[in-house]
Picture (cartoon, rainbow, N blue to C red):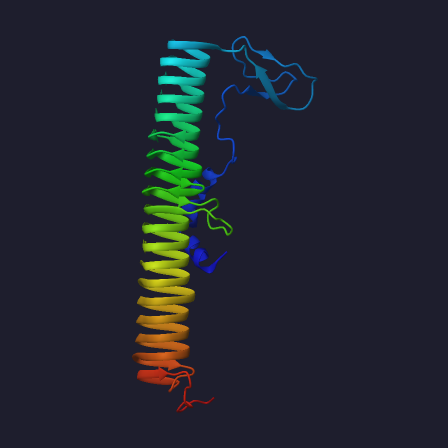
Length: 384
């Protein structure tokens, strides 16, 4: 694990563990069924219970180990204009509305509204809305919205939004808004907002912002080899992570990215493997390679920093620019160090402080002022 993200993980690792576990699952199956798909019931042929629909016939097989059973239902009928009942199942519905007191299943829905109190299920839904108190499921949704109290799922969602108190999930989301306690887009999100307690984009995110307690973008968090990107104004929450951030700002308690290009990264901990932007601002600002400003109590660039480091303590293996703080430390300093204590193994510039140390400077130890040049003269008082 990289030094930068390892240090960041020590601060936020415990808080992240639970949401990350929730985000893992099958890449293709998100719990919806395509139109016309057979119902699968769990069980074995040795007498265990199976879930059967009315008038269902179990396909007979020889007794063997536990396996999934395919339940072949009587082919549902087409229905038009208006459908209502306790539990409805239609092959193709074309009309105004489908209303169910319990569960509604439409293999293909073309209409205005599909309403079910418990579960609203569609292979393909093209209409205004799926409305359910419990769950709305659609393999392919094209319309305005999925609205529920519990859960909305659509493998392919094209519409205005998914709105629920509980859980929204899609594999590919193209719309305006996912609003829920937990929002998840497995492969791609294209829209305006993910707004909720925990927002997760497993692939590319193109939109305005992720706003929540936990915001995360990337196929796997804190892993190499991910080519997904977040293009947005920003991430705003207690914890923010992006594999590749391209936007204006990350603002939160912890703001982290593998590759950050944009404006500001602000948090108690602000960290990136590679940072290119205006500034990292936090109690701890961390990077491996950074260009811009690092402003904080402790600023650390484990490999290279170009720009300004301003804080209580500043460290960069190689710095090109200015270090301004109580203590400034660099293996290779190209520019200016200003502080109470300044240290560089290789100095090409100026040190101004109460005590200055440069192994190849004009003076190895010097109060107030020290300098280093490309062709440094022999040090006065040096033992080397």
